[in-house]
Image 1 (cartoon, one colour):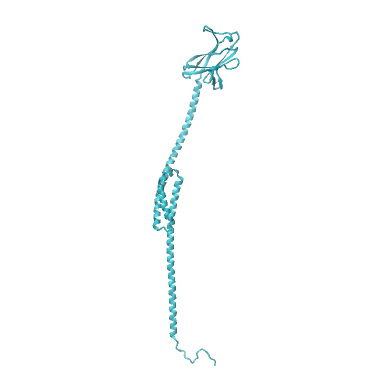
Image 2 (cartoon, one colour):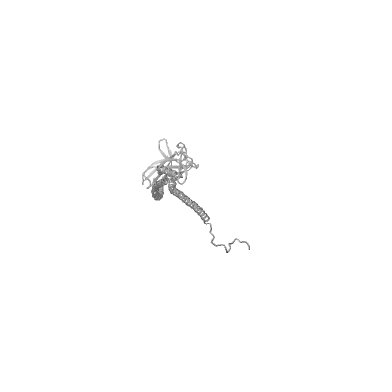
Length: 328
């Protein structure tokens, strides 16, 4: 019969087992398990504590960064307001210069705190307080700008009104001046004398002082020009009369000793004249004027006499001198 490891039917089933060995092994396993669990528990707790500490530090850093950014944002807004005021309002520059020291001091203190990476909460709170003070000063400047802007607008409106009124006055003045000049010109022209009864008489002066109308050209010592003038507009006072005598040769008779003898007329340009005489005129009356015209000798032929006053020709006549006969 073959051998087998299985117990035979004849062997008893309740053979005693060695329990002491099993108990020791179980205790060892339990101790190892407890130690392992304790280690894992320590590691898990330590990890949790580290994570909490990291979260706290991170939260603190985030809070600090957020607080700094918040202060920086407030400060940037203040600077923007200040730049807007000082950049676009030239009139404010002079007023700002008086407060520049205070504003610069505030800005320097705020910048110092914001540049400090280790600034404490107290420092940031102080920065907020300084920014609030800066904003108050900026607010005062804004109010000043508003006041100046209002005044400028009022001045601009007044200036516009004054400019319009000035233009109206200038237009009226120009109209008045033009009317005045036109009236003055009308009066000036109207005050020109009217001449009448013009007469040209050749005279011989004798040695005994007597005068007679001569029959020959070679005996004429002077031409006596006479005429009447009058005007109801011309005011009483002195007036100048100009006489132009043109000889038979077509040349104006002038006196070399008289110097420049040029008359500016209103219609005939500049003319040489023979003689100038001043008279005293009384407004509204007729005045007789006599002008003697002399020269060394008179030629045979026609002599044209023109009378000018106030730039206008007021009379003209012709006198003929002949050889040995009577002039016509």
